[in-house]
Length: 236
Ligand SMILES: NC(=O)c1ccc[n+]([C@@H]2O[C@H](COP(=O)([O-])OP(=O)(O)OC[C@H]3O[C@@H](n4cnc5c(N)ncnc54)[C@H](O)[C@@H]3O)[C@@H](O)[C@H]2O)c1
Image (tube, rainbow, N blue to C red; front, side, top):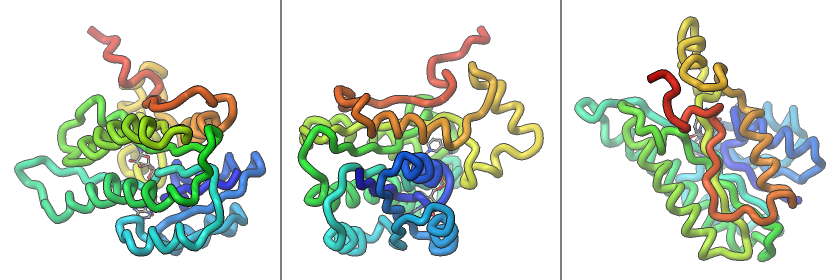
């Protein structure tokens, strides 16, 4: 399959590109960071495209320039921790632009290129934060809740293309590494029923499944991959 992965230069996107490359899929990694993208290209030997998904013109031009694809993984996302009382609206606008509008631009402009069969797939990245409503995460959780709504909506609108979302819990990536320094890792691990934080391959393996024929009847679903974090609290 030919698969476009946004934000694939590091973290969950990179792990997904790596695992899918090992399955002999043809991967196109899109990312705005040219340095990490270059390293990803060296490691994976796949096609890479250096664009910012908040630039609709560039997104549209990119999809116009490529041949047919079978899958799109809308993985690029950012988060900015800010309590409402101290929030910089300009910074939070960026969260909306990348997570929500970026996903929308990529999906809309990818559509003419995605084969119209039920083996074609769109995977969106939501977050356990959409369900747990973490204080201080600003608009992040709200953008991910919107992604969940769009996932179900697109599953209806875009049939026979299957549209699903995965919602990672506490996952160590380059983007979140700061949150796991020192004691923080153990504290966070203890909050998870499986007693460990996840790594990027925990998410990539599920994306691989959702893209595969084994998930041929899975459509319009939100799948949290969080070691049980969103199941509730055991310690009452
Ligand atoms: N890591 C976690 O704990 C976690 C938890 C829940 C959800 N998620 C979601 O998973 C996805 C990946 O998270 P991660 O931890 O791997 O992130 P990360 O920060 O490690 O990597 C994100 C990648 O996206 C790229 N990117 C960011 N903005 C972009 C833009 N405008 N255009 C193109 N590329 C852009 C970055 O350059 C980077 O390579 C995100 O959507 C995130 O919200 C992550």
